[in-house]
Length: 385
Ligand SMILES: *Cc1c(COP(=O)(O)O)cnc(C)c1O
Image (cartoon, rainbow, N blue to C red; front, side, top):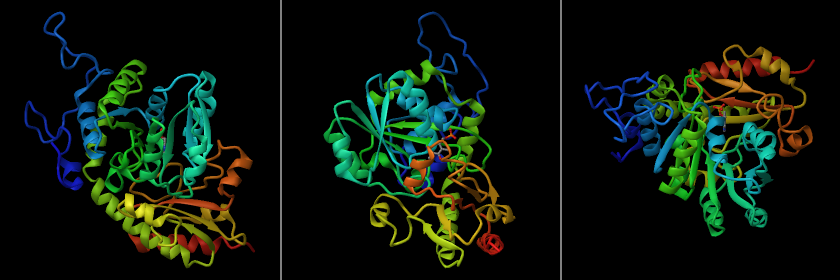
């Protein structure tokens, strides 16, 4: 069933109750296999790698939220991205936007490269450069918008149009926005991937991933890959994710409201050299972002002035935790240069603008004044003597 508003779909979308008992929550089907009534009967459920009712409920919910044909739940975001990359073969080339998630770069560079799948890094903001890079080996363009960690915006419709003129696939990692804020399939994308570990899960208590396909042909190929390679999400985490998604709307409203305030607040702080936040009217491609997304999101990056010590800033935070990951109810900070983007070679990293003094902040849903107070005191204490 399709609901007019996503707020309702978050709660009632997909399979929203148990058809057998009318329990309002989808039961957790902790079973590896299902009894069959006879030979050659083609049962709906046969083995939980192939399909499990709890995972299927999550998958139908995700497909509905992203306006896709089908969705596939995986044991992590990287397992989901890996499944997508398995659509290609030796000799093919994938173009990835610069600033793509470090793990996406690493799996292409260190794992798929060994199987002959090539990649090249392109500036997806530059259509001419992208157009030139699409040679006959190129089979897909993989982007993130806003991209990690400088929140670089890419025009979804422009990319989808250009990529389709070449008859190849457009793939978006929609982890930072979630379908509540942005739906790449609406702009013509073929595949959407998620680290559901982040906002979809929202409570920093699970690892999960998803792929959403825009058409039946891709759905069939992905179902085959998911079953053949087996990186599936288990029933209990599937249930937890359904539970989390019900509150995605209220969480995102609070996350993004806090982020908007904090971004402006950080801009006025004497310790801060620069703030990256797509919600700023003067942010590069702000109007493109606002055309394709509901608001500026809840990720902010900022650079400390050279007179401030980055290590002491992290040490002095009391409420905000230094940790990998993002998208949970609690605010987290990370140091992209040594954490999320450590797998990108030094020279390239600096060139991308991921400097030593850059901080990435995942704004949580705590009280805004408490967050401001924590940032203010930690910034003050980090002024070098
Ligand atoms: C975390 C993340 C991933 C990887 O997901 P895991 O669930 O950690 O495997 C991929 N893309 C983005 C944008 C991420 O933030």
